[in-house]
Length: 319
Ligand code: COA
Image (cartoon, rainbow, N blue to C red):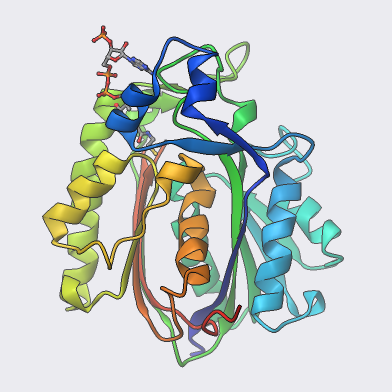
């Protein structure tokens, strides 16, 4: 059976920065409140670009870093909750078109902030079944179009961006284990109701409590199942929703600052793009090298959640 390996990581963040001070002028809030409750200082906002444009830029770089050409890609899968179009075409189809990748499998998935973990599980299965060889996975979000900019309880949290990776058949640094799950009983706590109500609605406090418990349990279970102690992890990359959630999980698992990647302060919560954007930050800072053991975890609307354990199969970053 072929093994699946994550052979590159890349990201794209739109240029416009929206700071907490900017938000103070839009809703009744303060930099102090946002920083203390979330750790977020700023987020990126896409202006003339849609979700597929953000995804295309990250994807192009991911293919280049995998030392491949667009024609080598045989599937394009995009996780998003803010697609270009309501039903069709999928954002993946538009990204594939922009990259000149035609006549290959292309589709979107919807798993909110856990999107990238779901993508990894899908890509791993498609490679290990022998059905595909090089899969482009993308988490891309223009959340600014589904955020209610008059609702101070949610608009301070989210940002736009994209992250992408290539998963290829390669046995050297494999994706060791991926776990995904969902419980629709919690659907109402984090929702875009639809119809006239197209914006994100969230019961922040309740989401917070379930997120900390679920993430901790999921990470403990994947480490135990694979008999890997937490001090053997080179890089822990949690979903970037709230610094307090990250700190709570980090402390319970005893991860050090050196092990943990935190980018929520500069990007906010970019949903499915958050983990690959954080991985890319670590990669470009020289913190993620070929063969490093990485642990990912995520939690989001649905509720959905998941974790992944993998060795990084890409080349170490060259400036
Ligand atoms: N600025 C100032 N005050 C604000 C505010 C803002 N932006 N947003 C809410 N408040 C107020 C509330 O109205 C409330 O006031 P009250 O006590 O007079 O009623 C008070 O601050 C406390 O609100 P609460 O919602 O209890 O705050 P919190 O400590 O739970 O923090 C979140 C709010 C959203 C930051 C926090 O619940 C959270 O991060 N939840 C998880 C979110 C998340 O990760 N979602 C995505 C999962 S993928």
